[in-house]
Image 1 (tube, rainbow, N blue to C red):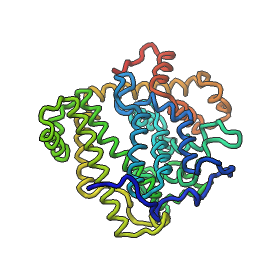
Image 2: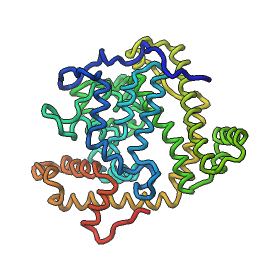
Image 3: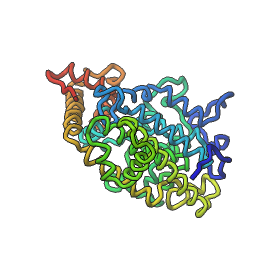
Image 4: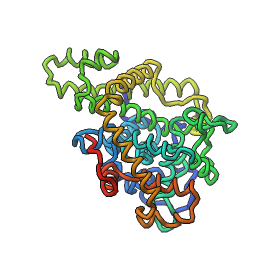
Length: 403
């Protein structure tokens, strides 16, 4: 189908002029609406810059062309804006949520998160969504009147709930939090500003979440092929949607060189997935008629998402990548070494807190075990891959090369 480059603002789009505001009231910007201002604050914060040296799948120094958390984030933001534009949503809010969605990730991607989660066993564990909330509400300290970025309610709500409600209407934890409960950091902030954890977030937050899936699917295929973890014909044979696109490319360009063949696949896959989401989301809006942004939040299911066929395609791609890329022996070896680096650093700082920087040691001698443990984890979580390896080499005789 043909997708319009833009359309009239939908009645269920978030309206920057009707934002619920910020925790700390501020004068209105003369040049930017509140959601654009959130985007700019996120881009200028230190945690955003550090994403350039944080792992997506491959550690940053394995190659210049592999995705990092930063390049992944920028790709998610581009896709989120495309979805928002086609569906009449607020592009700035969708972009803000895409830009902020990975700010809570520690070094070394999911391996670093697993390691910190184990280090914090008995102290609430580690959750990158909760950490992202703390990054934007506590850790960035550049403004005179408040800690954090003082983002709008809508951006904070979407950051916490972009994957759906965290609780049911009675407050019982759902989905990924059903077993361990909603992280304490989210519950604590929710007492300050009620983020309505039992409802869906805005359509813009839902668009950013789907954009994350689309970016993962397309660009991890690209990186996996670049790393020679599998061949294009193998994923074409293993995933029917990929096979269809490859056959289409080969029919139109029978003598295309291998590199262009891959790039053409990635480009067409992104378009295919975006169109699928737009088509199905329009059908949902037409069927359920939410009528307002509050109506979107009140629904029993998300308004933005893949069709049934799109869900199957997304699952098939992730299954293939899980088997052939994420659990590939080469990737697992590097990630296991990365977990060791994080665990070693945590153990060292727990034993020798004097080696923490002065601002992280402040008040530590008076802190209880839980607060002390969390402070150490916060410091490590903020590290880039590169800095974590440098710190490890300072305290240990051998540091893995992670190659």
